Image 1: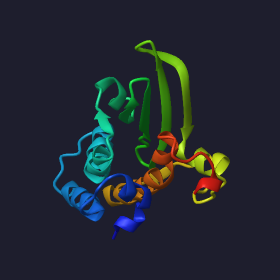
Image 2 (image 1 turned 180 degrees about the vertical axis):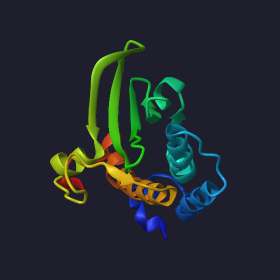
Image 3 (image 1 turned 90 degrees about the horizontal axis):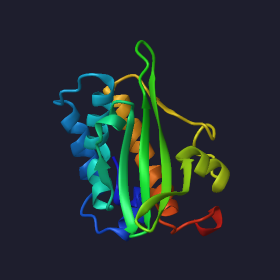
Image 4 (image 1 turned 90 degrees about the vertical axis):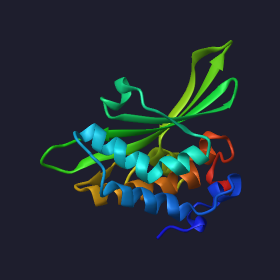
Length: 181
């Protein structure tokens, strides 16, 4: 069971009544969800398990069909008028084998109201391994794998802890290296 202490940075930056309830309620809702084809299955699970926590932190789901049909599920937040940040879940379905996902983090700068080529992008696993020197995942090219709905919910919960502990602080400029942890 998750506790608010599992998300110390999140708990500091956003007043949260009970982080556990979001993940528990989301996982319970999955039992009754109409899941359908793989991208819809992943989307439903992601929104139910992590959606409320990300929304509370100011990240909004961008459910554009062009993204979701290709396995990209993106949450965005405008830090101010010239910088937007994104948490992107990249999902790959493998019928007959374990499916997988990874988390990509992107910071984009707008110039004169237009999206520019000025951006930084890194996977959560590469951020941990190469930028922060933290080896909590198997490799810098780590993908979470799952074979069932319960496995996916567990994997998203594990990824969520790392997103709130390391990914969001990096995106929002609150942490830049392991020395600041």
